[in-house]
Structures are given as C-alpha cells and as structure tokens.
Length: 65
Image 1 (tube, rainbow, N blue to C red):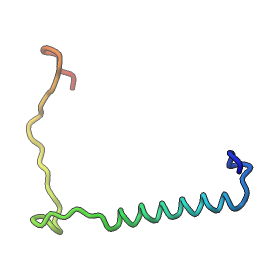
Image 2: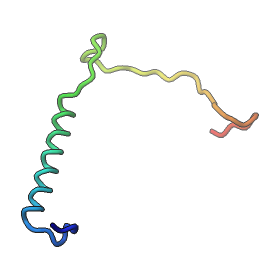
Image 3: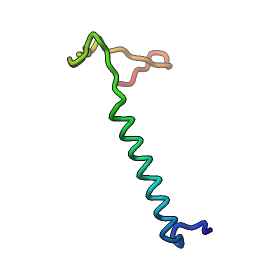
C-alpha cells in the first residue's frame, strides 16, 4: 500500500475514479430530484419588491453606503 497517488497502481487509480464517479452521480441525482414547491406559486415566478433603503450601523451617526 502506497501513501502517494503518484506511485499508485492502476487498481488504486480505478478505485479513486470509481468512487468519485459514484459520488458525482449521487450528487447530481439528489440535485435533480430535490425541488422546492410552494402550492400557491407553483409554476409562476415569484416577484420580490424592494422596500425603502435601510442603514444598519454600530457607530453613532456614521453611515457608510
């Protein structure tokens, strides 16, 4: 068993590539099937309107915008 990937044999490289491929497929499958649904806005885009500008500061009277 080697601790370096440079000197590893084909079997070790195959295991690493196979594990990475399975992980990518699981990640893509979860992302594909995971969806957020809101029954009221299903199929329609949600419009977000901006309100008045608000300034938050921890200093007295100093506002950086």
